[in-house]
Length: 298
Ligand code: GLV
Image 1 (tube, helix red, strand yellow):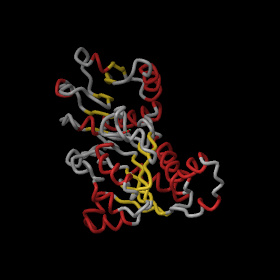
Image 2: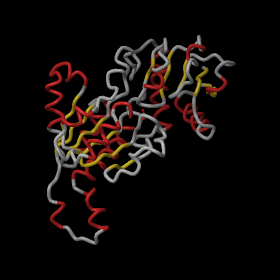
Image 3: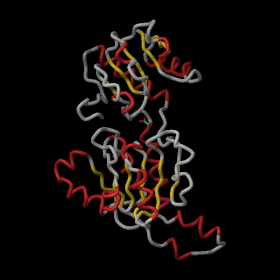
């Protein structure tokens, strides 16, 4: 069974051995050779513009990521299935816990006091406990459990909550989120979700952790909010343009911590197991786990 695979040359053999274990009948074909070798399945994350339309044999696309925006941008005509439970949740929980502790326990102030050789034992007393997680799906709920175990009070928000409770409900949710965790997927509906107005709805002194997609946050509005002192800081893993351009003022901002889209990496073995389970299910005509709703875009 032919399966197209988009990967680096270094990772290709690792995928071959993971598939040999999980789905021995699989024959992996480098994505670059797609024109010559018809395949019913493709495992990809960032197809070139127009490339999907040239693959008439394709039946299902599996993304090698939890986010599917790069693939959905191509408006594929076959089902798209994302990675679910492929080892990302513990990584995402660790990433968000790091940020929540950094701001929540005032450790962002430690560096400043240290630079002044200043022993400020009373500056670490107040703790920001209330965390709002926006995008409370599979990953978000796992993150929530990890934060609860660390003593944070966690509130989650999904798009169905906005339908049920409206903008006023969302405003209340944001207004109580001392630490706001953004795990929103990138869709037409979430574009610049965090604009100046929504950032202003966060409580004064709130911190923002963005580990979803860069397009959901207006970086200019974030900078303005940080500079006005309304937001105390931000931990950012994702950006509208990646790599983040060297001239971006975010790099040098004293209240911003930047990581290069590493919060939750794709782990080859669990990802291949997740895809193999779905390929077997597809062969039997069973439901695919993680199938994207094209109208919602996630
Ligand atoms: C990473 O950003 C992913 O979508 O898996």
